[in-house]
Length: 149
Image (cartoon, helix red, strand yellow):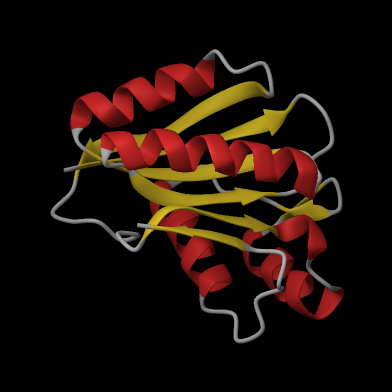
């Protein structure tokens, strides 16, 4: 089992129409290849965790690298793991661009701020901690999209 984490800049500002399209294609591809994971999106950036077999995850990342919606892709980590953290989702998408200040402010204080948004970390453990902090929010905004297995 492998886990890959990357972050990238969006070629254009993100909204739910764009995100829904990304998640729909992710769901189809991931259902076929056995990948699970989570995708965080701000107005200008992505942070994604992909989990699955080596070839499937590697191929998915190759598609992402060639996707014109992504710029300045930074591979945070890619390695062997004992098991999945996000096995219940083919892909879960969370738009942090819709977080109200009471939600976003503590996350900005903890992880930093970049262009008036939550900074997406470049260290594996911090990236996973941010994802978990967001998924643990008691009132995760309705705009998050689940695509289950």
